[in-house]
Image: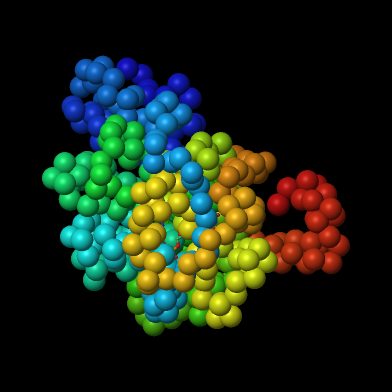
Length: 399
Ligand SMILES: Cc1cc2nc3c(=O)[nH]c(=O)nc-3n(C[C@H](O)[C@H](O)[C@H](O)COP(=O)(O)OP(=O)(O)OC[C@H]3O[C@@H](n4cnc5c(N)ncnc54)[C@H](O)[C@@H]3O)c2cc1C
């Protein structure tokens, strides 16, 4: 067999194929943009076809209608009542509430964590003391490792599992499993697009050089200045700190411009209504305008969407630990464009990766493509001259 998908650009990198292969002849290998793709060892491949059966892209839309989905989606504005947890989460801290509920039943929670060198990888935890490692968004595509296999093993032993990740990772898990399990709850996060792990690693190397130190902690959405003005915060082992608003941090500028996203993110099939998760979590930016809800503390509001009756039951189970108010679904998602629609591919994305692959170093890439000065000028043009002029300028100078 040559490849799993005819058009490999639609591969989401979930590794369901690699984990399902009985001969273990599929390995996940980074391409020149730094995203993982399956590579088949043709000598060992028996052509059994199980990799194709497990692929969420090949099986998107081919599943039977789920009876648990009737009457859904429904949406809520919510935040967790524990201020400490809420402040150390990216949105309103709802993920931690669902996770604690699963862990208290003796279950395992899977999600994205940093490893020792701040690479983002999925992992499973079974103790509340380990939950902080999964907390907070890491805006980089995470490596799923063997987490689907581990999940299947636990579910077969009738142990509860909460699996969280991006929409494509949940779709990957579902098509890997190939059947429903009563003990499984799935959560996907609204997804803007997943940035390249290779660019992330270049950014970190640049930071370590500039601050002459290894890194001890990273928060992509530090809330010390509030949820609406969250910052990239990096602590270094030598005691120094880096803290920038999202509009001034180069990695976030690249992320915001969709320059760093995987190609499949520009045509994602797993956003609403294509999600296969029981619950979807997002920031609820419109809560104040739509529902007149403002906790007045700027600590974060979650948008929680139940896509199935199982998702709603999980929300009911954590009700006492959260503020929850039902929201009109269509209005709620209209504040969060990436919940339902993919971004357009930026014109300069191929140029960015071409420059990177011909050896341009991060400081030069940053100056050319992720420049906070250019970003500030753009913001000024938008605010003072309006969207129309900003759009025309963007076409002219392609930044
Ligand atoms: C790449 C990415 C893009 C996002 N884009 C948007 C967006 O456009 N709009 C929006 O409203 N929200 C977006 N989110 C979701 C948002 O940032 C919060 O993660 C979400 O609202 C949950 O917040 P919380 O406070 O409940 O929990 P938190 O504790 O803040 O989040 C933890 C959850 O995020 C998951 N997670 C963290 N990093 C990753 C990762 N790299 N890959 C997969 N799962 C991860 C964990 O597994 C866990 O489920 C995005 C998240 C990611 C990871």
